Length: 199
Image (cartoon, rainbow, N blue to C red; front, top):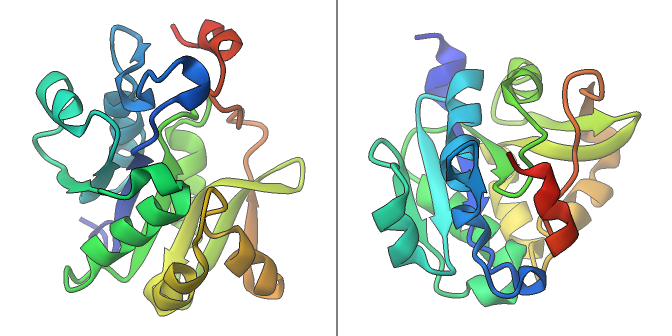
C-alpha cells in the first residue's frame, strides 16, 4: 500500500433525493445492473482509495439493504434535504480522527467520471495542504481533493447545494487543476432525460 492510498480517503456524496427525478434517490438508480452508489464506490477504490466513506441521506435504509457497501464507512446525513453542503460537512466530520490527511470527494450522480480521472486527481496529492480539482477543458469539476488543512474552512462555507464552491473560488490560486476531459465526461444524472445515460 502506498502512502497515498493510506493517507487519502475516498468521500462519496450519495445523499440526494433525486427531486427532479420524481423523488428517486440517486444512490439507488440502476447502472450496469447494480445501484449507482456501488459503481461510484468502485471508481474510488479502483483509483487507489483503500478507505471510502459514503454519505447517505434519502432512503438511507433502502440503500443499506440493496447496495453492497460492506467495506465502506456509512455516514448518514440527517440534514441531506438542505443540500450537498450539509453532506460534505458530514463526510469531512466523519474523517476527523481517522488518520486521513486528505479526502478525494466524488458525487454519486456522475457515472461518466471513472477511475482514470479519480486516479489523476489522487496522483496530484502531496500533503495536508493539497487542494486539487479535476478540470474539463479547463473548467473545474469533480472529483476534488481536499487536504485536511482545508477541511475546517470548507465546512464553514459549505452551504446549500454549493458544496465547496465558495471555498475553492476564494482559494483559486492554490487549486491545482488536473485535466481529465480526455478520460471522463462530467455530466450529472439530474432529470428523467439524463437517465438514458445509465446502462
